[in-house]
Image (cartoon, rainbow, N blue to C red; front, side, top):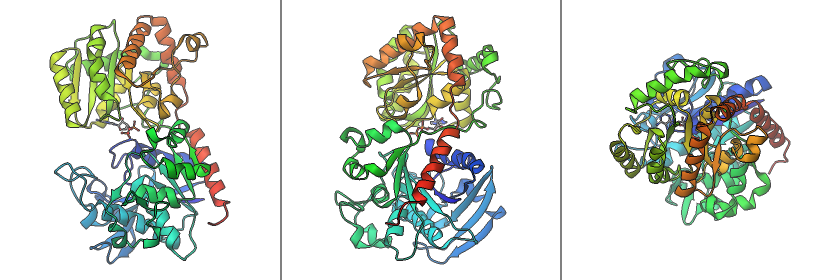
Length: 482
Ligand code: ADP
C-alpha cells in the first residue's frame, strides 16, 4: 500500500514539537507491515541542502508567485518529497514565525501551496508513483481534503490527524479565492470558522476519517473545554473520529545506546544514571542532593503545558529538597518567571532557555522525574521518553497523559503496575501534592526502584499503533466513495 504523508515538520530534519517526532517515526514502523510512505514537506533551509542529492520529479511554473519543484530525497531511512519553493520556504529561523515573532503573513500561501501540490500528487501521482491514500497532518495539510473534495477527478481517500486542535490555521475569508477554493465550501459545515477560513476545519469537514493522537483526547475533543470551537463539527463527524496513541522511536530514544548521554545504561545498570545526573547538575548549576528527586521539564513554556502552575509550586518543590532543571522556550513571561526562580532558588532551580535536542536526551537520562502538568495534552511525548529512560513521569490526568501513565496510588503499588504519578484537577495545589508524593516515593528506594524498572519495561514503541494505522488505512480504502 502506498501512502502519502503530508506534514510541515519531520524529525530529525525540522522539528518544533511532537508532530516532527511522529512524522519521522511512523513510516519506519509501517514499512514492515507493507506500507510504503512518502513524506511531503516543505524544503526549508534545514532540508534544502539535501536537494542536490535528490531527483527532481516535477517542475511547477507558478506556485503562488514563484517557481517550485518537487524533489525526492532518501535520508535517515525516510522517503521525502520536498516541495522546493524558495519564495515560500527559504527563510531563516522558525518555520512558522518571522523575525518579529509573529506568524509569517503569507502562511496561508505557504501551507496552502503544500496542500495544493499534495492534492495534485494524490490525484495524478508523481514520478510514476501514486498513493492509495493520503494521510494529512495538522492544519498545514488541512486543505488537502478540501481540494480533493472540489475536484471532479477521481481521488484517493484522505485521513486527517489532529496533533493539537489549538493550532487551527485561521485566515481572512478572502484567502479562499486566492488559494483556488470554491466559494461553495465556505459554509459553517465546511471551511468557515466564525467568518474566517480555517485550514484545520476544512480538514475535519472533508476528510474521510479523522484521527487524533490518543483515545482520551479523541473523547475530549468533543467537549467545549477542549474542542476550541470545533467540538460541534467534531460531534457531527464523531463516527469517523478515532484516537490512536503515539509511540516513540526506540532507536532514537534508547538509554542503552544514546550518544547524548555521559553514560548509557539499562534497567540492569541503573546506577550509571548518576553520571548523567552529575552532568545535569553541572550544566544547570544545581547543588547535588541525593535525598530528593531531580525533576526536569523539557517543553514549550506555555500555559497549555501548565508551567505557570509549576512556578507557583516551586517553594514547595525546593522546600522538600527537590531540584529542578528546565529546558524550554515560549511565552516570554513564563521564561522570565523561570529565570527569576533560578536566581531566587539558586542551586535548586536551573533554567536553560532555548531548544537543544541533545540536552533533552541528557535530561531524560539523568533526571529522576519529569514534570508534565499540561492543561490539555493531545498525547505528549516527553512522558513516553521518561518511561523509556526510567525518569518517572509526573503528569496531569488529561489526554494522552491519562492514557500512558499508571498512577502510583495504593492499589497500583499493591498490584505492582504503577509507572508514574498522575494528578487532577490541573491546579497548582494538585501539582504540589503530586510533587510531594513523588518526593515520598523517592525516599523509599525499594518502591522507587520498582517503579523505575516497570516504567522502563512499559511498551512505548510504535508496534501497536502502527497496526492500528494499517487497520484504519484498510478500513478507509474499503469505504464507499463520498
Ligand atoms: P508539543 O508537540 O505539544 O510541543 P510533545 O510532548 O508532543 O509536545 O513533543 C515535544 C517534543 O519536543 C519532544 O520530543 C520534546 O523532547 C521536544 N522538546 C520540547 N522542547 C524542547 C527543547 N527546548 N529542547 C529540545 N527538545 C524539546
